[in-house]
Length: 373
View 1 (tube, rainbow, N blue to C red):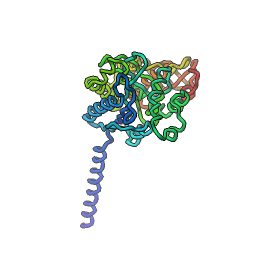
View 2: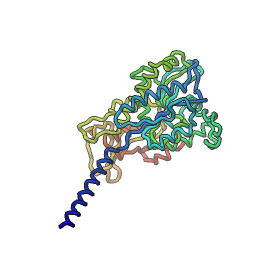
View 3: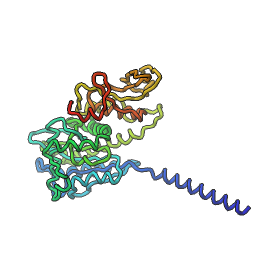
View 4: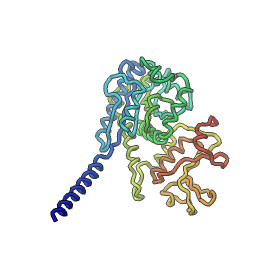
């Protein structure tokens, strides 16, 4: 009898320990980690338009963004720098990788030879214009301020477009998330602050290159523009820009926490996705058609939104014995990335992008890597 009682006590102890461990694990869920990167610093002042220092303005904006996010539940904020110190480009993204971060956001101020103005947000990708290349080139040339840059960057040349091609492949997996975050931030700048919209663009930024998560680079405006430089150098301007960056990050984070309960609406709506599509620079593949494949089924469903969790623009095609259901139809790869993101938020977790040419389905990776665009 004593042995049975003793065994029972042991069993209860094991159960309580297990319950405590499970509860502890639940309470220690990973927070949403954002790494904020203030461009330049230390002996690298960044651009000095109108006598302002990019490194100081970027840091002040970043610290204000962090202050807002740190007040949010479930957020953890890390910084590549919180003071006026020089951080090598190749050391910035690894801060995020080591922390298993959810986002990497780098903040900068732009410069130009004329009176250009406006805010723009970039994701890593092949630049579609010389202007995009010039922005990336200016930011990447910081590597020449590093004593051991030849060793750290293995022959990378900021002046060569060819050097940037290989960089983009690592971020391909996160491109749709990066574009969505960039679009949310960019829409906040233009809609809430009425800043001139320089759109969401792709370019080869070294600072984003080695990040293993969605990453964006924000060009908050031009210090070389007298009016905009003064705005960005002011406490008011820095606070307003920081608020809109933080709001974009919070909205993005909330979009990842969507319930599958159909009674609740997604955080990001169809209208917001359409707004984002208007904001993003085009990435057209002439002669190709991208679609999001939602499902394949033996059932022939009526093409009504209520059959597809509210999604519109759904098409059906019979292939062999299955009906395949596709969302969207466009030659713009950036647009289809956003549509895939929205379909996932609606509950189609396993949806993916397919591509056709003259009605024939092709391998997506081959189309994306081809020069026939």
